[in-house]
Image (cartoon, rainbow, N blue to C red; front, top):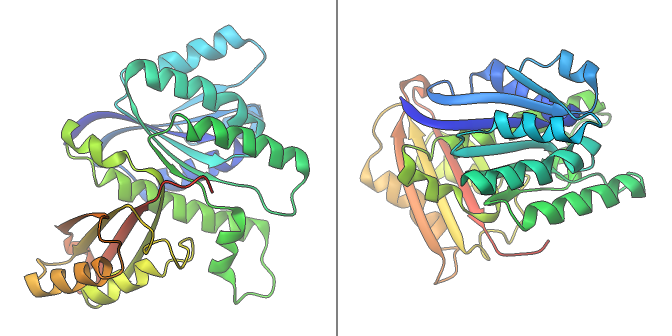
Length: 287
């Protein structure tokens, strides 16, 4: 069992929902993971299923101490939630400062607000995003509109249904990144800068990676302009070399000549005949 101290923290109401999803799905079961939520709404924290909840009240010294104590000894810190919340704005600078002090690797799965949201929330999100860009090791920050694509065939979609989509994607994203960690040496694979990811299933490795590269949160030119790529194939039984090469070459043939490429294969008997593929792309962009 991996003994690295890993913290996964939900920011505000959206983060608390995502954390509850991860706990119910058993994310990080075989790792030393602790789930936390931080927020400024006591009712949300009271309903949180996380083991530890930090209330962002006006007593700043207490907040600082609570966060410092909660992340003490952490090797990896995941941040999950929306960028437009006051909880994210207040907590992220403190968490990132603490992470830097203790030398923890940080990965953020956050969502930018809708185009039609009010200007105050947009401004809050922009300020929080700027804070993250300057300090986090890996940043996944799609606009909220990206998540509508998953329910594109539904003429009407409720906010609850949209939140469920976001929770599922963040849950899968954190799980994909957790799978990269095997020991301290594996922490280098979590430092991707500005990143995005996709995943999919198929009857063959090639089919699975094709689905992953068409994942709705990916843009059409993300692979073409990627500077670093990581592909992971998981199957019910050991894949043949030809099938792995076919999958990897499908991605490599779309990359720039100087792009870095990494791949990994794993076996999970629970998948049966299906193959699950995930892909992480990194690109140094301000967008």
